[in-house]
Image 1 (tube, helix red, strand yellow):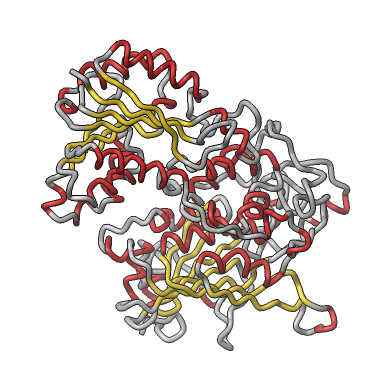
Image 2 (cartoon, rainbow, N blue to C red; image 1 turned 180 degrees about the horizontal axis):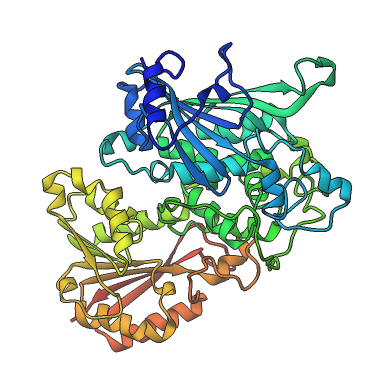
Length: 560
């Protein structure tokens, strides 16, 4: 068994390297943890448990340290046996340096939005005496992303099957501020994700119990999860529990929330609360992020990039184009500086509390409709143009009736993600022989796409600049000439039904346009006038009697 207490040879080996750690600073001789930094531990009992080192890309016999924007991060293993292995991340934060060196303290705490404002002298002094050096916050989330970025991406070349498998995990964070909700808040955030939650309140000072309890809790999460998902849950929800961030919150943070929450946030019963708190109560950003999730455009499973570390405090301030919710949009939506609004059910809007029946995401509905159309037409050789993250490609490969599946994207990065999602390196040969990955621009002729039964452009045309649409049409209908073409695109008229999506705002930042039903029909009519195809129009998703369905659908069949 490898433990930092019982194996002095491990300590000596760590100290012989250039990077050394003094574990006595955080290991209490009585068996507990000292508050000498911000601590997070991850444990597993999967056999052999030491494979956790492969998943985290950190060797159990080495104590390592990393310089991050949040402070110095130490990674070590208090225990490492085949039965149980625990990895610890300890973040050392210099509170004085945090204030002096970065021009501010923990901006974005309750009532803040990651921006600086005028403060009194007493307030300025108070920033030197706070919980940042020992309480888990966005500082720990930044360090988590910096140190375990590859693990959070679900990448493990040594153990790819294990990285894709849900394993028994226990995550412990000894000091988590659960502001405005206590243990119940932690339960509401993590339990819907499949975690068993234990959150024990901490006393302000054990020597003076009459002082009462602090807002901090000793949080333990137990469950069976993919390690990448588990780390992402913690990464997103730590700032939500703390109700603040130490750096500027802008559009990039909203994009990050959509990306990291794509798999689970849209169905979370507390998604409104999570979005508001994660985005520092900037109502416009929170509404836009939730609208993008509700619109359910396929969000690529791109992980946090290696080395991702937002600055501690933004050097320049940006105006909030969507408006900051200084007064609060309904109970619980915001608070004045220094306030800690209650987040019990009585303090939340009805949308935050009531759990509606589980809905089928629009992206999933689109894929099912496309599969039904292809099967009904007897299409066997199919190309997905602009395949994105490859979810449709995976669905096509799962059905042996599709004898050839061509995944096409202009982005090599997208094709790499498709290969990773499909576990191409472990794919059975009979399935692999049915798949082709093709890097190609959709606006140029490509002989590799000729003579197919069907071509799919799902949520693609709106990403093309309008002047390039004729070139796209010629490449598909004039050069490739498949027997069947299926196109889906957003119905801009339906956008008013998405909560938080401002009038005139498109569903995705990369959309060049979004068509009304008449505009889409006119474009389709132009194609059938120019090429030997007939077309049928339809929709995907629950239609509005006045606005139509959220997604527009066109099915082309070649006539000559």
